[in-house]
Length: 114
Image (cartoon, rainbow, N blue to C red; front, side, top):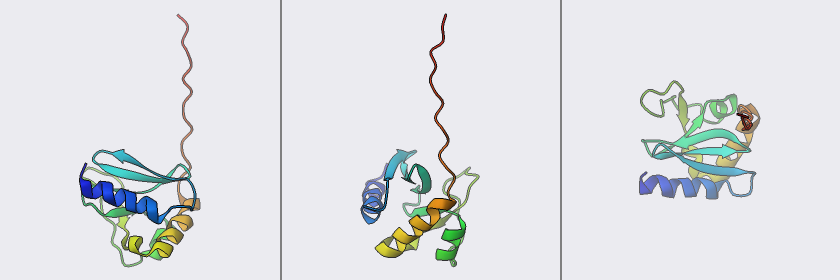
């Protein structure tokens, strides 16, 4: 994991401080970002923030072209140049929230009897 990604992840979290349950989880050398348990974006090999494509992200980022976050990915995402504009970035994430898929329920770990 690059030092740049660690610093950028901390910056993303700082920009979103106070808008809800936001967290970053390290994944495959980058980070995935969650709000209220829903993935909204990530840092990958390119070391730039990418956000999921939703109607809200399309409205907020009309000039951004979809990119593949990593080789072999089936999903495309949008680069997010709004990161430096705290209020616009926060509003984007809040607008995306109702459009993001709900987290999958965790499977219970039932004990098997022998």
